[in-house]
Image (cartoon, rainbow, N blue to C red; front, side):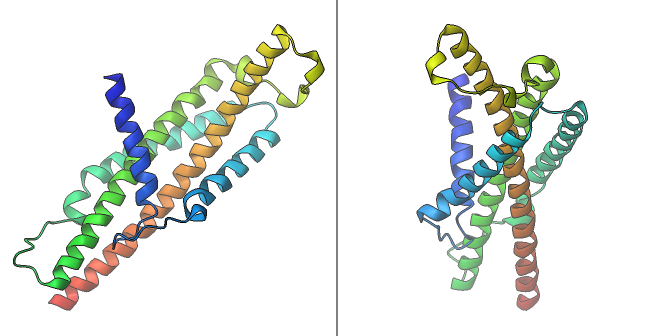
Length: 210
């Protein structure tokens, strides 16, 4: 079961990242900049927040962020359940003309893009809530002030190495919370804006056909 879950989550992440770079006609942006620029930008911002944030997350932030993420999970699940018959209805290619086939391909591509990105957003929200809860469960540990420590290469021993691992774990927890929340925000804006665009085009097509 765990291997299958890991495979499903990996496929979901890979497809969401890939489909984000594909337009409704199936054209994919394959440039290095197009693939990794967004990740690098979010990583830079997240690392900056980790550096600025000194004493960990406040109780108010944990409560607020957890509430917002929980609401988003409910909205995203509802969107997936009620979206399929709204975005895509398969047509018979044998009776369809070239324009209808193009519309069918575009609707199919957008439906896949919408489903995978929304599904990936749900997973990110769950992961963010889980690791954010660590700050509430282990306040002393995840509330460590990182600025109080400096790296001294000439004083490496078992104690300092263990402490370094703990500090690295705290820094990673803060980094991923910021990174995932930025990713969730971007994916949500991407899906909403593309959905409005697609539905507008779809309405225009139906009016033209009538």
